[in-house]
Length: 535
Ligand code: HEM
Image 1 (cartoon, rainbow, N blue to C red):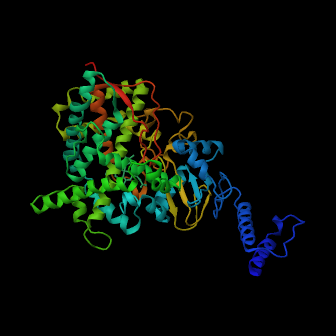
Image 2: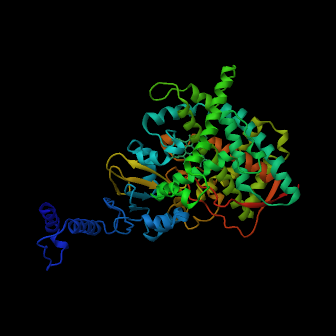
Image 3: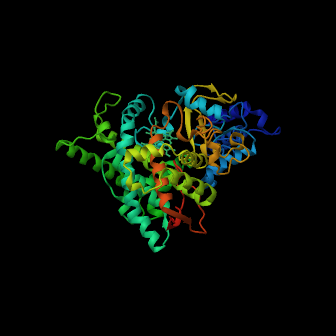
């Protein structure tokens, strides 16, 4: 008892400045009261010290600080504005008239949020070795992505990157990938858009394009036809994959995410929990692996992504086990399916809202593809696609306004100072938000929020590519997206073929908005009507 009292006395006397001048310590005290006083005092002192930020976090030096409430920092604000989180970052940048600010959230490392192109280039390229994905990122993504390339660091990342790079070569692009994209396009038109053009009923464009990129990518990467374009409903794997992805993203925002899930049997009886969705996803991936192993025993030979990884060695110089292959498959599906489907959906959303751009793009398409695409073989198509300057500009401009990875971050390994003078401490999270960067008037000028593909075309008519620090849509440095050419090829094939054949119109009365997730999907999809284009 005495010792507790002594401790309280010592805490209080160490912090005299915070005590009322006429305060007197009691002579004797019960254990219960002592514990209450200790807790209350400790809490009071912590509240005073961390009055505008999360517990045990520090404000960064050299940049404005967005304060929050005592001990929790901006946790509840972040949860409240979760649905518009990327716009929230843009709002704070404009409010503080800054490109970098600090923020703290209980349960996460202190954050430096920067949209400064020089800082972004520095983190991704110049001082790449000091910024890693880190343990936090791995833990939040683990159940879905395991040790796959997106959350891996060091040697674990390096061998995955090397193995993947083997499939991204020109011969594959010209002869193999283009052919698959054109083949799946034919399935999509025949089974979906042609029917809608004839019966006039609306269709969710976002959902159809997701199926298109899923079928194409699973064929390219893993040599399997899953024919989701032939299913009316969403395929169970895709549904569970989307739910788990959203759940991973929620963990970065709301530390109670896993608690809500564990309470589902009470709050939402009869609904699937995350572990049930993971089981659906695992079944999908393990079936692909099992089937491939059987095909190889029967003498089958493959050169796709899956077989590259089956022949690869991990950081311990061992062949990959099924769990490592499962992680690889899922990491590549998010890379290959979601990003491109979203870019295409947002591109069509913007085109439908900007008839001038749509007309100009159509003129370019008709100039290079005056006849029906069926007359061309895949390599010819590939060569022509590369010449479409304006179509590339439309694609890049879409990714400026709706980057498929709208927000991203890395953990600092050691103390550092960013090019704009902001201090970063070891263990802090440095975040950049391509969505907010794309709309920043400081980076893109007064018309930053407008859709103007011409900004990607130089005076001599050639295509401009912006420095990655300004436009990190495909990341930069050693971890730059290895699939960017594949994505561009797929998006441009689909965009040209679809625009040439159909006129899409938005069904009125929809609120087209992004959903906060690891990537940038449309929250409620996008309903359109379809008409054949007049020849
Ligand atoms: C519009 C389409 C795409 C966009 C905007 C895009 C963008 C990005 C971005 C921003 C990253 C960095 C993510 C991070 O920090 O972890 C990334 C990484 C990656 N992307 Fe893409 N991507 C697209 C399509 C693709 C496609 C089709 C593939 C094909 C497989 C692909 C494969 C990858 C891989 C493997 C990585 C990890 C690279 C590494 O960590 O070393 N991406 N991509």
